[in-house]
Image 1 (cartoon, rainbow, N blue to C red):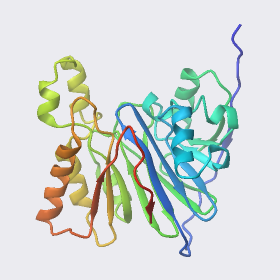
Image 2: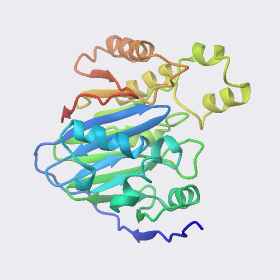
Image 3: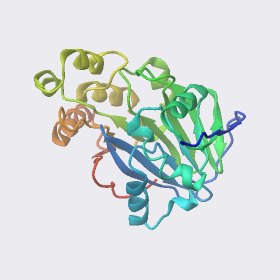
Length: 282
C-alpha cells in the first residue's frame, strides 16, 4: 500500500529592499534545456537551486563536479510545476528535507504529481522575500502553468534574473528585470525548425507559438534588447529545444542584436542540457 504524505507548508513574509555589501557570488547553470533545468547560486551565506528539473542523481553529480553537495543547500526556488523544472525534487528535496520556495498554486500542482513529503515555504507572487543574504523578487510570467513566476535574485554582487518558459515578455517583466547584471533567458525554438518539425502535431506547435508558450530565438533577442543597460554583463541562453533549435542559431539571433546595438560589454553563453556551464563569478 502506498504511503500517504502530508507536506509541511510555511508562509513566508515579504521583505522590504535592503542595502547589500559586496562579497563573492557564484552562479552555475547546472543544466538547461527542454528536458530539464537547474541552476546553483552561492553567496557568502546562502546556497540555492533555481528549479530542480534534472534527476536527483544528476543534480548531485553536477554539484559534486563543482565541489558542492545538496546536503548544504539553503533551499530550492521553483518557477512552476512542469516536470522539466521539478523532477529532481523526489530524489533530492524529499530525502534531505530541503526547503522548497514556491507559490500556493504551484505547491498544489506539485503535490498532485509527487507522492512525497516536502517542506514548502510559500510566497505570494509579486512579493519579495529573503533566504539568507539573497533577496528574491518574484513576478508573474505568461506560460501554460498554474501560477508560473520569474525571479530576480538580488545579491551583494548584483542582480540575477531567471526568465524561462514564457510566451512573451510583458511590460511588468521588462520592468522587474531592468537592474539585472546576469540573465538566464529562454531561447526555446527556431521558428523554421519548429514549423518543419515532423514529430509535433499542429496543436502542439500552436501551444509553443502562443502567448503562453515559449520564446523563439528572435523573441528572446527582442527581450534582451529591451533589457540592455550598462549593468547587464552576462546573458545565458537556456531552455533550448532538442529538436527545434540549435545552439548556433540561438547564439546568432541574440549576438546579431547585440552587435547592432553596440553592446560589446554583454557576454553571451548558450547553456547545455547535458553539462554544466563554467561557474560564473558575479
